[in-house]
Every structure is written in C-alpha cells, then in structure tokens.
Image (tube, rainbow, N blue to C red; front, side, top):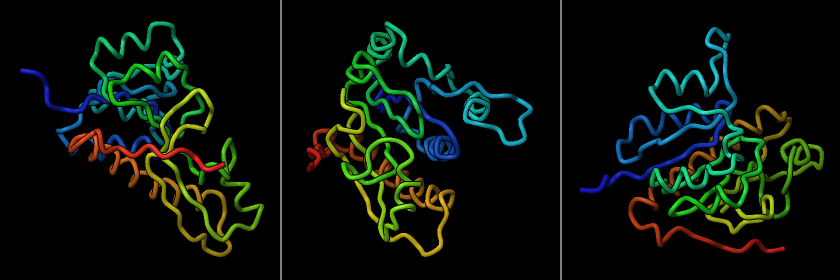
Length: 198
C-alpha cells in the first residue's frame, strides 16, 4: 500500500522556516523528505533551521544542493509531491522545480508583480505604502514571475520598521502555505494558478 502522506522538500531559512517545521511536526499527513538550509552551529545563541531540523530527526542538507545536477531526479526517486521555498536566497533551477509531482512554490514577501525582486519590504516602507502583501507563487524560470497560487494583502501600521513588517509578512505567508498544503491533500487539482497581471 502506498504512503498516503504528502511528501515535501523544504528550502527554508530564518524564523519562518522554524515556524513551518513546528507546524508540520503536529500534522502527520505531511512527511518532510528533506530540509535544505544554511548549515548551522550547534552552540549558536539562537539555533537556526539546520539545528532545529536535525533535533527533529529530519534529513538536512546544505541549501546549495538545490542547484546540484541530479537533485531533481533524486526528488523524483523519493516521490516528492511539493517543493516549498521560504526565505531562501537560492534561485531554483528548472531541473529541481519541475521534479515534484504537484509543483514547486515560493513564498514572496511582497505583492506580485508590483514588488518583485529583493528588499521589497524596505522598498515598501521607503515608498510610503499604506498596504503590503505576500504572494505564494508557482516557481518558474522567471524569478518571482510564476503564476500566483495564493496571496494576501494587509494594512501597514504607522511608524513600522522593516523587522516588524517582515514579521507581519511571515505570519500572513504561513497562512498561505497552510492553505496550499491543505488543498494539496484534499484536492491538488484545486490549487490555484493565476497568471500575474503586468
């Protein structure tokens, strides 16, 4: 009998990655095949994803593996359903993002397509935006250009700084990730795929 769980590869960093791991640890319908992240230090003041994932007994590899020739085939052999990227600086090559059965998704901490690229939280504050948002999009060859699966917008409080706005983005973004994973379990054909409006 085949394993009914959803098999995930996570390309994750920072507190967002740790929060996702803890959320997944309470939901047996998801199986983390591998965590890809920056190697961490065991005795660090604040443990990163690497240390937390190892302590959870997960298979952990350096994030650079995502670019290794053959990693896509490794995911196919391990029946990976979804590749999920959160707060990772790596651009995912075609071989890797095309391998998972249901697709690869990236959480972008800005509304797309208006705020594509890097440092979008700082730019939103600099531009005096009163609203911001997060986008969970399908990974494509165009950086931050894939179809939108889920998005959310929210008001930016007055006198907010980049750290605080990042925290709001992560909170909203993890909600989008939950929506994606729940839809992938209940009916993957229902995962949205909406082209970005340029």
